[in-house]
Amino acid sequence: MLVEKLSDNQNLINVINQLHEEPWPAFLNEDKYVKKYWRQIYKKYPEYQLLFKIGDEYIGVGNSAPIYWNGNIDDLPSGFDEAIKIIMENNGHPNTLCGLAAVISKKYLGKGISSKIIQNFKQLAVEQGFHSLILPVRPTLKSQYPTIPMENYIKWERGNLPFDPWLRVHIKLGGKILKVANQSMIITGPVAEWQDWTGMYFGESNKYIIPDALNPVNIDLEKNIGEYIEPNVWVLHKCE
Image 1 (tube, rainbow, N blue to C red):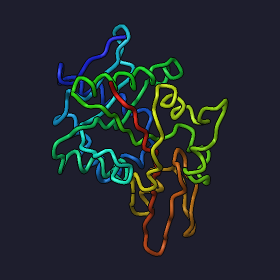
Image 2 (cartoon, one colour; image 1 turned 120 degrees about the vertical axis):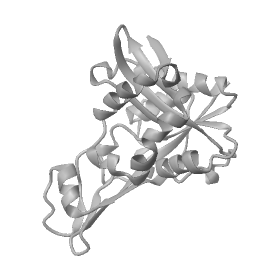
Image 3 (cartoon, rainbow, N blue to C red; image 1 turned 90 degrees about the vertical axis):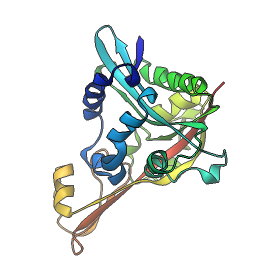
Image 4 (tube, rainbow, N blue to C red; image 1 turned 30 degrees about the vertical axis):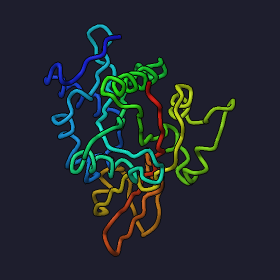
């Protein structure tokens, strides 16, 4: 498998965009920091965008950026949104690699590519002189259990490893769960837009379980607003 960096070929932006079209629910793309900064990260930090290729086919992408973190768990960003905000607005003197997304083409899922992405993130961190890789991880199967608090979900185990396959990959590679980021992403929008994003109808104000969400979405018809708060899990890998 070949690994390429966006800094080697700016035309690969189109490949990255195509790979990102597949896995994410529509509402995540409506996050205000994603809309404001995601494409800018490619331009500002092209050397941190990794593409994975088998033969002539690009089968995965790992997005990351440098960030400053003092090593204290309490001082981690509140989640994905704040991490991107820091990276793009006030990055100071970065000393840590922050993994932002790992995407794999559907037909290559379950073939060990996710491990390769993490290993290459760790290698990239070392190349940049960093000793830590942190990631706001979106557990793969949490959307099947949206009413279970993330704090409980991450304690589920199978064979002395996390139940969730994405968390399990991290732990097998030496990662350590630091804490839950309960407000990692916050997405708000008019009720009609939530109906478009989810393909559902909301007939009353309530909390609704929607496809691919890790928590229920809160719909308020009187205020004409829906709010979804996405929890993630901060994971640390030491890099040497």
